[in-house]
Length: 188
Image (cartoon, rainbow, N blue to C red; front, side, top):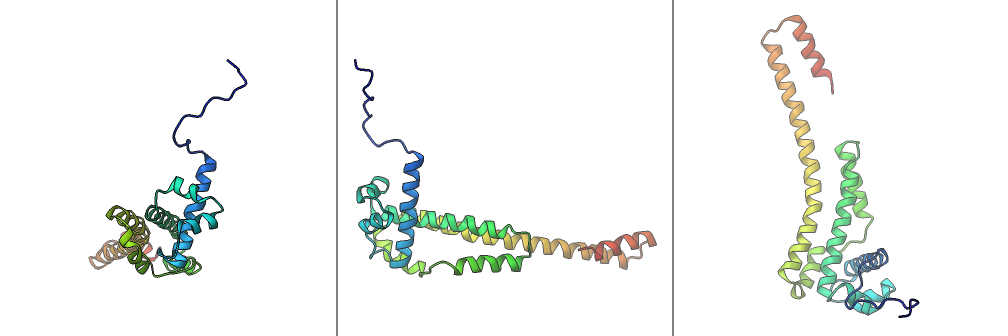
């Protein structure tokens, strides 16, 4: 046996490598951009391949059909938006400023009426595809909902401390207790 020969490749798809993952991610980002810019019907697998600088076969290697590509690309886009939104919302500045930053970030991106886009694609999508997209979209809403819940909770805590302090004040506590309560009320 010749030791200089390279071993035969095993049949089937090759293992996913970092390079393959980069190619897949590039296809996903490009596809999402094209779908958001031109709609579902006007975008072909060939256009995605050309814009991604890969072959059409490469696109089909990762995604069995246009509906799957649409679902995964849009879901991935929503996941990226969710991460960016969460990052902006973790800022230590006030709620108003954080929401303003999220709004600015959103307005920087190209827009299309997503519901119209989804309706256009619905005849090609399975219930599973639609569910996957809706779950990814829901994550953005949950990130925003969580920041509002936190703000409401902090506001309630401040109110309840004030109510407790007022109760002590009006029930005639001793002077040292009164001073401690007044101090707590003035603190932010």
